[in-house]
Length: 159
Image: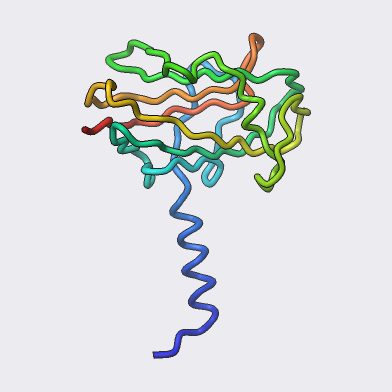
């Protein structure tokens, strides 16, 4: 059976489309809500992340800050029963080493200019000590005056 090149283009577009992750805005953040296709997390097919202990997940998101940021700090937490718990090794660390140009090819770091599109790329370990539990992941990038980007997504940690 011979398949047309149009089929492959549609298939490639569907693969790219399904790799995005649906996320919710952070309740207390004033940053612009991230839309469809702006966040992609491995093992998060659409709206719930399944994170297996002793593995590593990757994240990629588009950021268009509404103001200049000289520095960018990670605010990464797991929220269990409405209690925010910082992700060890990620919470409060600099996000600048993970900032790339819009295409995600060239590392640009900080500062970030208002209105310019950047790509944030990182990975995070699901440590074997993490409990097997359902939680909400809070992922914010910002400074003391507010967020450049922030989202939340339901997740489940599995053994």
